[in-house]
Amino acid sequence: LSAISSGVKQVREVLEKGKKSFENGKRSILFIDEIHRFTKSQQDALLHAVEEGSITLIGATTENPSFEVISPLLSRCRVLRLYPLTEKELENVLKRAMEDDILLTQRNLKLDEKAKTLLLESSGGDARKMLNTLELAVSLHTEDNPKLIKADVQEALQQKHIIYDKAGDYHYDVISAFIKSIRGSDPDAAVYWLAVMLEGGEKPEFIARRLIILASEDIGNAEPYALQLTTAAFDAVHKIGMPESRIILSQVTTYLAGIPKSNAA
Image (cartoon, rainbow, N blue to C red; front, side, top):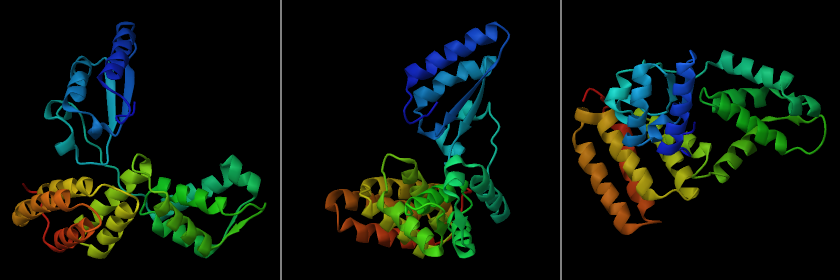
């Protein structure tokens, strides 16, 4: 199931099927993508099935499950953290795509060494980002037997920003990159991803809400004032709107990126 498009009704239907299978001696696996987007009532609906063992629940999330998954459900699960892929692992994924993907093999694609390096470095350890960028770069060529060069990859990376979709996967990739840049105390990268979101039409209130969460989750008692500042920023962007809100959000973003971090709270 996708937590974005599924409601309580769909969850209960799946759980009912799992219960019938369990009574027949079979245990079902329920995979929920973006489980953090489920409401409390949707997550509550999973509890009984998990407790009785009629389903094996696997939930995927890009958020901190301690904040986004209800405690009763989280206490019945094991949290496994997936780390970004190494450059060698990404290279293996790329090699497999070049050799096994039907469309790429039909085009007899060749990849320049500098283009390959940029693909690997720009993905941030995310194979999906790398393959999406490769797909966009290939689409720039209409001829057979294309050879991708560094400029093609650069153009594809720019196009990814242009096609920013508030309802699509790239939307969540960008907000994740934005938050990670602040966590990593990199104000330049944080402002860059902020600009990508605003240029793509993201609502400033959405970004301000994410900054409030970050102020508590990632900065916490290392700088308690951060929560007051982000709350004030949300109120300010709500009152002022665009385009001036970009200045307020930039100010707060660079401040949060530059101060100490702590998740001890």
